[in-house]
Length: 279
Image (cartoon, rainbow, N blue to C red; front, side, top):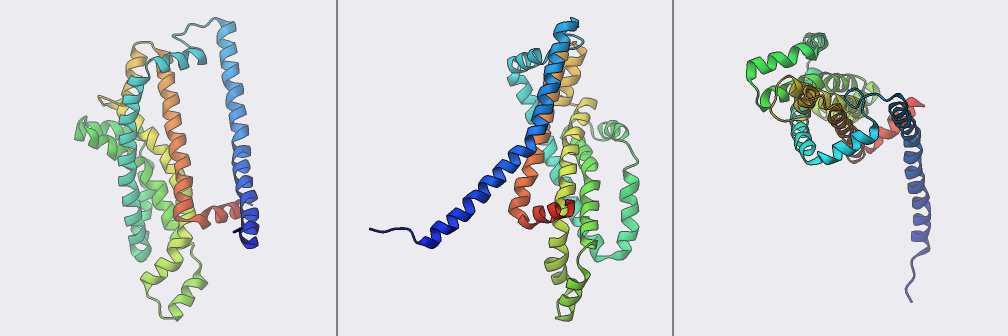
C-alpha cells in the first residue's frame, strides 16, 4: 500500500498552522472595528427610538437597510456607474503616476522641475476642480474620469518617486561595479525597493478615487451614486441618501482590501517590509 512520505507530512504540519495563524490574525485585526461599528449603530438605533426624531431628519439604521434593500436595483445601477468611473479614472492615474515617476527617477533635473508642481497641484481643492471639468468637458464620462485621476495621482506618484530614491545605494553601487546598466540597476534594486511604499500610497489613493467619483457625479451627471444622493436629498429621502453612503463606503472598503491581494501577488515581500517598519 502506498503511503505519503514522512517529509510531505512534516511540510504539511509546518504549513497548515501558519495558515491558520494568518487567518486568525486577520480576524483579530477586524474584530475591534466590527465591535465599534456595532456599538455606534446600536446607539444610533436607540437614539432614534427614544428621541422620536422624524425619519426625514434622521432615519433609523433598520429603516436605512430596509429602504436600501427595497431600492436595491436602482442603487446597484448607480453604484455600477460610480465603480466604472472610479476604475477607469484610477487606471489613468496609475499609468500616469508610473510613467512620470520612472522618468523623474532617470532625470534628476526633471525631479527638481516636476515634484514641486505635483505638490502645488494639491493646493487646488476638488470643490474647484470638479465644476471646471464639467464646464470644459460637459456631462459625459471624461470629466469624471479626469477628476478621479487628478485626485489620486499625487499620492501614487510621490510614493513611487520617494520609493525609488530610498533604494539601497550600496546594492546599486555593487551592481554598477559588476557592469550593470542604469536600467538593470533600476529593475533589480530601485523597482523592488519602491513597491512597499507604492502599495501604501496605492491604498490611500484608492479610497480617494471613490470619493472623487461621487463628488464629480454630485456636481453633474445623469447616473451614479453622487447624482442619486443629490436627487434623494432633494426629495427628503434621507434614508436612501444614507443607504447610498453605505454602498459608497462598502465600495471603498472592497477596493482597499483588493490592494492587499494584489500586493501579495506582485510583491509578497512588501508586507513583511511594511510590518518590520511599523515594528
